[in-house]
Image (cartoon, rainbow, N blue to C red):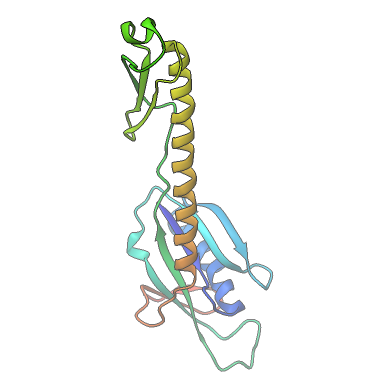
Length: 196
């Protein structure tokens, strides 16, 4: 599971809250790993963090409230800072090493007697994803298989790139959306003590 912790458009206090929330979650769920992060304006803060874990933490999705006097602006009247926790869809793994089924067939068309008598056309099917690539342009089955494999690799790479791009877009959409009020968790004070 991939989680994004985000300060949204919040000030430096929210960015510090993201770092403190990450520390609190790592203590509670030790298997959490940091995939990437965008540092905040002040040292130690983060605008956003992508975390990975094997534990289902979807119950944390929503806003997290931190009640604390501003550590950066002591006279600031605001004491409520909000961070967002979002579940980001994982990128589907298009593993070219997965099972590939090959089918051969008569190519048909021009090319002499060999094309119509021998199964030179090749269709490759990537079993895990169902992606298919076909080649009939070459005169030999071996050459068509090689070309079909190049096409299959290109299609799978394109799908993986598209999935990663969609994941990045989804993470950015979540980064800019924080709902204040009705938080899933509330922390208090500089020591970030969980209240609920």
